[in-house]
Length: 405
Image 1: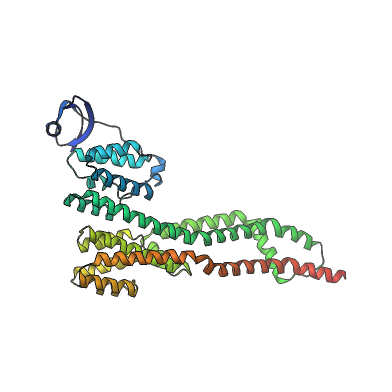
Image 2: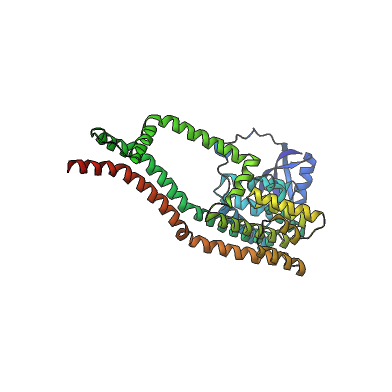
């Protein structure tokens, strides 16, 4: 379809102009007349290719999850108030501060004016709106309850944001400590140990093993730091390429669950997201097979996604959800029991919602006590570093004091 620019007047005499997609100018005129707009001018619309900014090329500037939550709540409120959808989207496009979201809303308005549903406009941006989001919207459009669909999506996104924030909170403290230790180790080797080496070189002492180790490490940092930076950069690039590959992403996502202290929290968080997403699609009336496909794309872990796809294959062959979930070896007995009860009573969505709430509370509880659990290991690492440094520096000084006496 081509794009046409039009001008027209409403029944009240107000001038309106916009761009819409249609098969011909006659189709544009017919659409305008059906909406009580008298066309004045209809011409083919030609626009220069839009330059994609560097910010967009780098994947920056996308609407944050907070903005999607606000968008969903606003749409639910506007629908309940009886505001026409195009007017609602135009109003949100004028008030939003995110240029990317503004572009999405303006494009969706053009799609609506061309006779397409709202989900068709949003589906062009899969990097912003996941499959679960679009599927719930499509169900809301087919049933005429878009307000309820947006309310469900707002609640789902809020819970998902809470889990993401908890995961960040769980990894922030150990990450900060490890980065600080690495920075302190580099600073000691570059600035501190060379000073003591100058003192020890003036003494006719046989340096102990720990001191020789510290001096050798310091020489490596001082004399070969460009090569060390180059090696670190190559390793980072190689790791990123490996993680971005299908096999690397799968192995990395699987290994996350084996990290001491944190792995169990990540596992429960992913299970909570799975249960919440699955419950949302079932509440919205999405078919079971399609629900499993959408959930596998939304859990944010390729290893879990592969397990969920195995469930989908089993269900397609006629097996029950409980049996297929048990065969994956991914889910805890609690999840399996709740799924079994849900299948027997026909309330899988309610059971999964309860499981999601339980795991969200578990994640919240374990993160509160994560510092108490992980501090002994971090203290042990710091103690070993301090011990090596103390032995390497103070042993020669004690030998010198013994000779002086």
